[in-house]
Image (cartoon, rainbow, N blue to C red; front, top):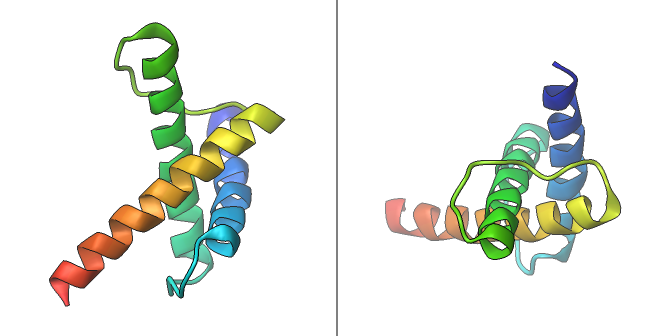
Amino acid sequence: MLNIIAWVVLGVVAGAIAKAIYPGHQGGGFIATTILGIIGAFLGGTLMAFLKGGGLQLTATGLSIPGLIVAVIGAMIAIFLWGLFNRRAA
């Protein structure tokens, strides 16, 4: 249960930082930012696990400075993918 709370906190912080860094207007409010941040934490954690160990496993980053950086990068990837999806749907 504590891990889930940590991922939500990390998602809020990573999503907000990623939206501030990412160029252009993304839209969405607090909930969208949180969801994209949590997805980013999983994307970043999975990508780092793949680069470190060569295996593909679904994992999230931890509450640390490197974990936050990886989560922000993952959230920026999630924002990019979300933007691609929204452009095609519109």
